[in-house]
Image (tube, rainbow, N blue to C red; front, side):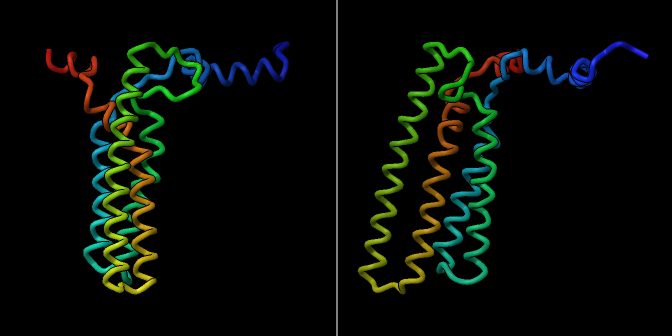
Length: 172
């Protein structure tokens, strides 16, 4: 029998799994090009399904379902994407700050234009006496779309706008 304490045995189990080695290395940031493109396609596709099919019945559930899937995946995609999070213990240099600034500025510009377009659609719906329940469903779908834009677009921009080291390795 060994003279190890319970804590030493638990520490040995953690070392055996390799989790401690992962914790000692900085997180690997990578471009998430295709996952962001798929999430944005799901979000815009769900919104288009909702608007084109009249925001009623099963098609509304399909559209919101597509948007919900995009929203659920966007949190994971942003977490593993190339932008280092605010307040992280990772070293953030000037390049990271500049990339994050450009990404968020492009995102907020897109957000402003999408919000303006949604406001025009809402005013048009009010002007043409669209039923109240349809306006409320359209507002819900629009809010979902705007949230997804804010969540996924910075990662998409940072992934597509920069030539990453992996790209250089694959080209050679």
